[in-house]
Picture 1 (spheres, one colour):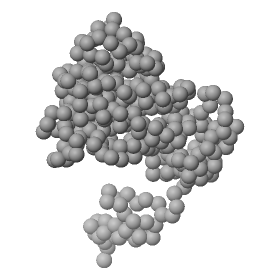
Picture 2 (cartoon, helix red, strand yellow):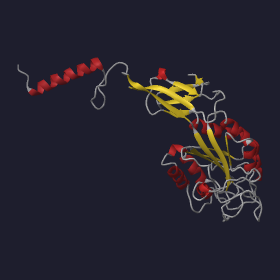
Picture 3 (cartoon, one colour):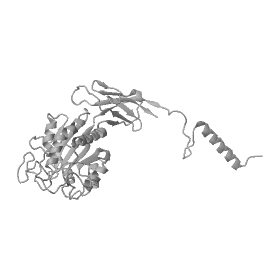
Picture 4 (tube, one colour):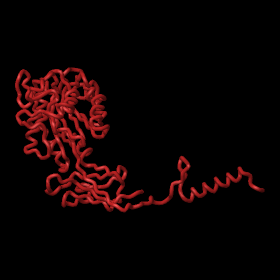
Length: 356
């Protein structure tokens, strides 16, 4: 019998399915992907890129009357924070401090001198520099740890109306970024905010965690991954904290919203293992900023070479680097020891790009 068109279509479909069975499986959309390992096409040129991770870390420290012991605790334990940050020796960091006082200090007030009615170190978003005269430290600052310890002791004679968000905006906006805070904020650096308070935010210009997060993401050119947030506070999940909230039962919902949007970490400012928790925050910053390098093109893995000046960094999980094909990124170990090189030396990665 001569096949009808319907039979011809049936035979053709049967033949196609047989071919699919032999060569691969039919996908949900009907395409038949090739069987066997993926094919690799090597390009005829190498890629060379530099890795110079940068992070600007801003501590926002409550300087109201209930914070004296908390500031002492922060200053005593900050060494555990900086020790973790400095484990990644090629991480380029800035660390500065502002307070929660935002009550109309004029531009003529001297941030370098404690005095006047408030006896506070600074306010209105200006970086604290009382005694040290250093507004922020970096990895080249002599005696940087002792300077940071001093700057964190902002005093407890500031405003009783704690504002966290408004001072952040002021600190990172004109005119302060061009005057008192000049040099702190870098356009190509990740920005990490660390809130230290026993109260809720009472800002009247930025009135929600979402607004604060949006402001910072916009500041970073729409890059949400360039904004990190952390908090040493009294979380809303703690019904009966071991130390009291400054406002009794008011919980820090604004602050927690902001931290959650930035996928950050919060912990109880009353915890006895305060230093360990600070180290956890620092480790998270380092992991997100200083230990992962995303590549713009997929490499032929056995051609990857990582150098730091004249030093060759090995392919090693702890003491060097590994390649993550899922994220197309190099992951750097936490035990890399870098040799002394010329100032400004960065990690350099060379590889042959491939198409898979």
